[in-house]
Image (tube, rainbow, N blue to C red; front, side):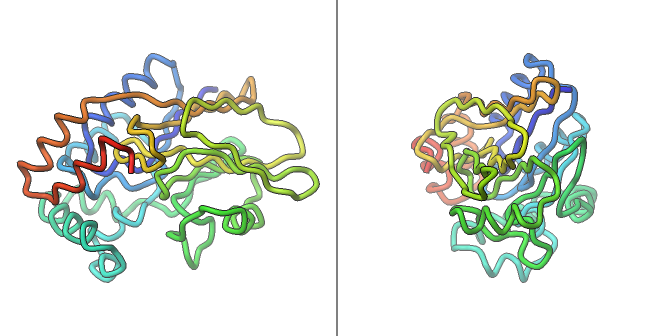
Amino acid sequence: MRYGFISDIHGNIEALEEAFALLTKARVDKIFSAGDIVGYGPNPSECVNLIRINKVKSVIGNHDYAVNDKYEENLFNTYAKEAIQWTRNNLSTDDLAFLKGLPFSLSHDGFVVFHGLLNSTSPFTYVLSDYEAWRCFKNMEAQLGFFGHTHIAGCFIMQTSGKIVHLSGAAHLQIEIEEGKKYLVNVGSVGQPRDGNPESALAIFDSDKMKIEIVRFSYDIEKTYAKILKAGLPSFLGERLFVGA
């Protein structure tokens, strides 16, 4: 089986459409989302609709959660809070119900999908260091975990010795799965990369070959930027797309 993994779409329909085109060309059998379908971007409802049309299995991200929980938005920075309030007003009742119903994690075929930390008490903690990766590994029964949240593509690997190493996904990355090791794959962000590369990111897992690939791809940033300005969202949310920050 070939699985596609996307995350942190953040209302960027141009990037999401390119992601689906790439995954179709790659002949993936099933697509999973590690959350944050909405937030920041100008097409939240369209992105929710596309996720549903393509039968993507998704977990909930903190922005997906916040559109139904105003307390969560108080944890956001100024730009994110303004954007989530705008997003809430531009989603249908059906969109909101769909997002509210998403689970915090999904298990399938020997892997688990989640948004931030694989921890029921703090699921939206950022996994940026070996310590947070270790916290995930100790709660992860599966060999493979796929997540997002940081918008930084890469992979944490727990060696048989227990040592954790990290591989960057700022460029194209291929990983061969080895017996006895565990892998935490940050699939990066479709809609708002933050690793210095403005190209979107996604991951493909081939369970027959036991290989994972992080793929970077381009989309029409200018078009998304123009929509952000037209919607009255903070211009910074569009400007950052050009530099991957």
